[in-house]
Image 1: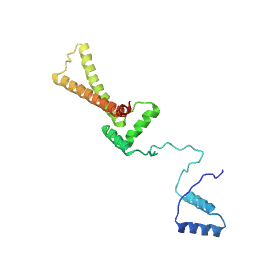
Image 2: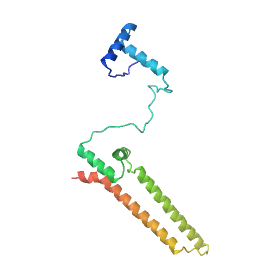
Image 3: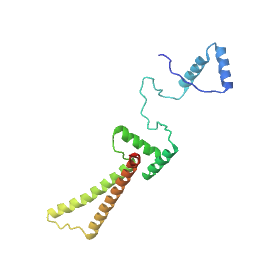
Image 4: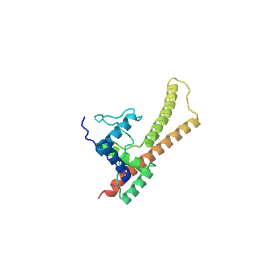
Length: 182
């Protein structure tokens, strides 16, 4: 296998002189000495699976991408992320994912909220189905006034919550486009 990959590092002048002296004593170059030292350390280390060069690296969620922003853009980013109650990095990740994949942005917290809404609406629907079945069988299944009021409160609260979520979502994602449109 050809050795064509490079590793570079900075060392103190003392370390450099020490490596030079060791290489001279062994009658090899400094590069060969450093390579041999690395090989010894890697062989004796506790590394269990050293990836081969021809293997594809695993997808790592923690891979970082650094972007320089103008201070005014950074401020806008913080404000928009705050309107969605998420850190700026999460907001940017959602924007990029949305743009690259052509999907509507929906953050994890928003997804959890909507899943909760669906679960609550499912429970209300189950109760209404039970009442309807009982009525169809001729049973007196008229709900008590308190039960109907409770279901109406749940439905009203869910409606208001979803409307607020959708309004915040629209405002957050559309703000940037409205400001730049001419």
